[in-house]
Image 1 (cartoon, rainbow, N blue to C red):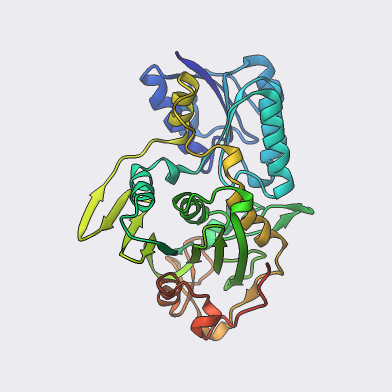
Image 2 (cartoon, rainbow, N blue to C red; image 1 turned 90 degrees about the vertical axis):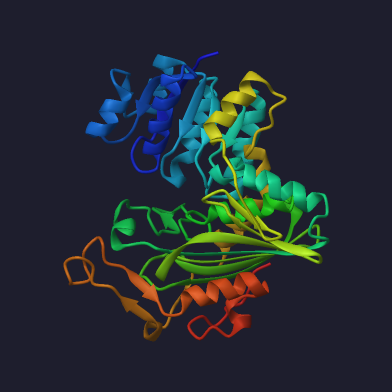
Length: 383
């Protein structure tokens, strides 16, 4: 069955959805019914969308097209009102991650989806990886013994342009509306959601405690260098230590520690390593999985909205935590970028020694404060 799709948000990350829809359309799996964006499409966007309807108002476009599926890939704080419109038009929903900026919004959208009897998928791409499925199965079978912890670390570098791309970038709120665009909850959201999936702790009540250390090296509202430690209902300790201010960027990693062995998951590249072996796996996108589920409900959703409770528990803790603490400028250096003045979009901010700190946190399941990281004295944690 060829299903019709409307896309809200065709620039930024939304462009990847427009590209995927074009590829799926060529294969006869979907038909693009229309595109919504607050800005006109650029040349690439126009070429991908072709002669399909374009509108700056999603409600108007949905009334005109009545699609089977609505994809919301817009700024975080706009997800709920646009998702309401998608469900109100009788369409199934795919909402990009992080799905909602507050726990209250998440609960409302889950209720709306159930009331409308529509399927709601989220855009946690890593959960479609067969490497995640394989590792979860090995853990459940006892391959590594009793799981004592899961540690994740990520060291990326984001230039000035990353924070200038939109008014909400790097913000905790915009005009009084929560956004929560910090390192833990947006660029490294996959790390947290994947760790919780591996531990079978995806529900809100599956997370017993949340400890946070939030910092920023840049002059922004949100965190750009942070650590979170969770304890799940299974007794598993989960840590995620991340930065967007790396001196040397590297792909993020999740490490699973058991009493009889350990495994390493490179979740952005679908690479799993354990017992001296390295396995490369395939992945299914959230949209492909949604289509398969709609065709046959025996195919489980890889990231249903109602299964994001554990992640939303962490996001809510970040949202309600005190503002991130500034990192001592003595531990911060600024790269000049191409133009040599430090002010261009390609210039960046780096935290000295941050790569070693995030890795140590993951390996020892410890917070920055416990590790004695000099640039990050631990603030009070929030339960």
